[in-house]
Amino acid sequence: MVIRHAERPYAGGVGRDAEGEEDPGSLAGRGRRRAERLARLFPPAPGSSLPRPATIFAAGGGKGAAVPARSRQTVTPLATALRTPVRAEFAVGGETALAQAALAAPMPVLVCWEHSGIPRLIRALGADRVPGTPSTWPDRYDLVWMFTLRQGRWSFRELPQHLLPGDV
Image (cartoon, rainbow, N blue to C red; front, side, top):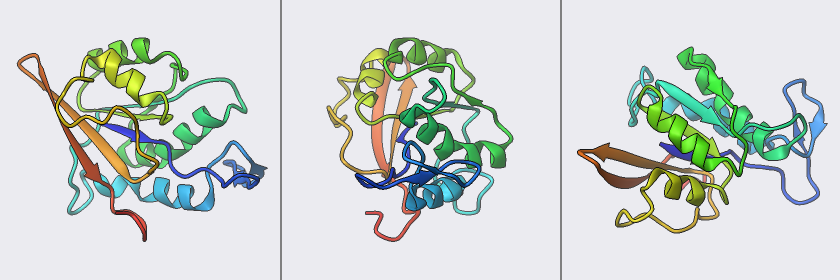
């Protein structure tokens, strides 16, 4: 499963870090709300629609890097609820190594990534030619891309999150 990090601040705006300090590299308020509600998509939440991740990856990188901070902030409440650590040893640009680690990790796997790096990840997984797979991530934060590998063949589904008002 692949998701984009939750909402970032609008141009010129700032988010807030874990200590509540203004930080342009952190999630916007709407993004924090999405992150807090993400656990509703997975068991043991009632009515959950996706398999419970056994492994969670988020973009990693140096302190102060916006994308890694947002990716980790997005999945940290979920990881806490599921008592699953967040693996953040791969930086945006390291999608080939991430794909190898994801394929070797206990399944199901959830990856929270930066939208422009998601197509590189899908190519590295070898799932880029699956019918219906978009070539780019749409300008949305409310999707889950589900890839399933069975008997050496990938399938793809795009699922809505329906976590916040305005989600399609």
